[in-house]
Length: 318
Image 1 (cartoon, rainbow, N blue to C red):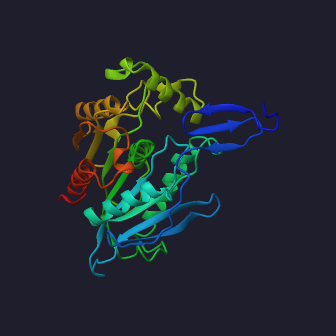
Image 2 (cartoon, rainbow, N blue to C red):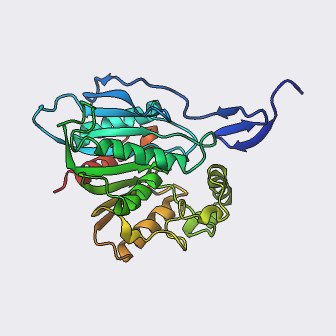
Image 3 (cartoon, rainbow, N blue to C red):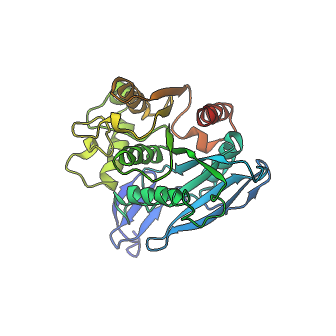
């Protein structure tokens, strides 16, 4: 045995290890793709710092062939990774967002929120809210980002994300009801395979104890809560969670994947939203035969392209 090798104090397989000396080793989502012009989609991107005090940044995307006089819908996107892996520079996310921006003809802000365990929750939520406010600062020309000033239709703003990012989108839409972000019209939220959970299994979760135990451990790692996986941050239909009727938008789309251990939570969210006193319109897209974040792993597969067509239609409907 190599005594010089640091001892592991905590492991979140197969994604991350924490060593007793405080070192954190991420085993997934470490690859980096620079912002650039993508010849395949005709989309250009660049990175910008949003909050210098915390180092929170974003990657901006826009179609390169848009007339200067045309204003495009704005999507604020939050990547997945269970709050502790991946980033805006992940090549898989970068490629997916290039394709989405090209298909939907939107301007998109991909937010690089701080991750646990270095920055435990609610840091990711606060960083994401700061990014949303930063986008809103361009309504009255208070912002300085040239890719946003006069280029986006701020009456057509959407919050979007996959997995943990969809969770963030939900909570920001709740927060925006009591804390309006001045001048922007939040039209809808896009939730791709949302990361919601709960202590008591529902649907097929009880039939997959191995993966259920894995997901149970994710939340307990990033959020120290005496309610565990029934904390309202991870279980939006738990007792004490803010009412779904408080969403500050009038449209929601939920996308689930048939093989995903999280699929029944996404369905439950959709069903609960429809039954609530929320006055908006919700729709659900179910992709059979695919697993969690399949669209990130292969954005060009037939089912991922179909899902993106659904999202583009959702964004651009009047």
